Length: 311
Image (cartoon, rainbow, N blue to C red; front, side, top):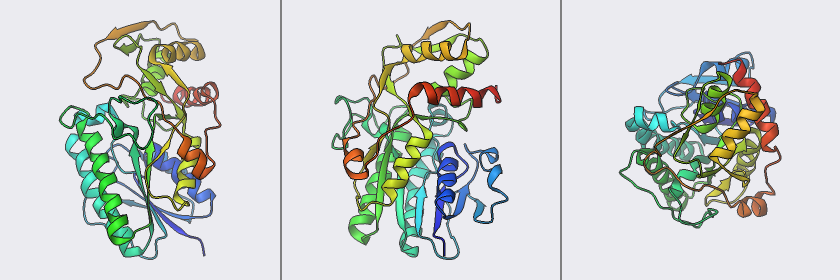
C-alpha cells in the first residue's frame, strides 16, 4: 500500500514541485489549493495520474480529508512582496488559521506534519549568515509584517502541537528559491529580472543593489524538504543555497545569460527590505546529509528557458 501525502498550496510553485517528488517516491498525493496565487497549469500534467487527487479549497475553512493520511505538507501561503501588499489579511489567515486547521488534521489522522516556513523569520538580520538559533530582527507592523509574523506564528503553533500533543512535526525555513513555475508577475527578483531582460526593458534595482541574496534551485530545495520530512528532528532547519551575491551582480548575470540589451535602473529601497540574506546550512548538512547540487548558472538557464514560453 502506498503512503498518502496531503500538500496544501499544491498548485503553487513549490507545492507542485513537491507533489512531483512525492509521486516519484511512490506516494499517493492529495493536493489542496484555492488558486489565490497557485495555478492550474502547474498541476495539469498530473490530472491523468490515478495517484493524484485535487481538492479546491481554502484551508482557513473547515478542512476534512477522507481516508488515511501519513504526512501533511502545509505549503499554502502567498509568498511574494506583491502578495503582502495586495492580500495581507489572507496571508495572515493562512499562516494562523490555515496552520491550525492542518495541524488539527494531522492530529486526527496521526500523520507527520511539515510546515513551510521562511527566512523572512529572520527579518533584516543583524547576524550573518543566519543560523536557526538566531531569533531575528522583524518589524511586526511594517508592510512585510503580515507574512513574517504569519510564519513566526505558524512555527510557534507547530512547536506547541509537537510539545503538547506529541505530534511528529517538522519546520523548514526556506531561503530564496527559483525555477520553472514561478509566476512572472511575482514581485520577487528572479522572475522580475528575467521578465524584464527577455522583454528588453530596464531592469529595476531597488536601492544601490548592494543588498545580498542567495538563490537555491527548486529541485535542491525539494530534496532537502523531503529528507527533512523523514527525519526525527523537530526544530527549524534552514534549506537554501549559501552562495551569496549582490542584487546588482545578479542583474548583470541575468543580462549576460539572456543576451538582453537591458540597462539597469534604480529606485528607492522598499521599507524593511533585508540588506543581507544567506543561510547557514550546517544543521541540514549534519542532520540530513543535504546540500545544494545545482549551481546558479545551470539553474538560471533552465529557468530562463521556462520564462521564454511565458513572456
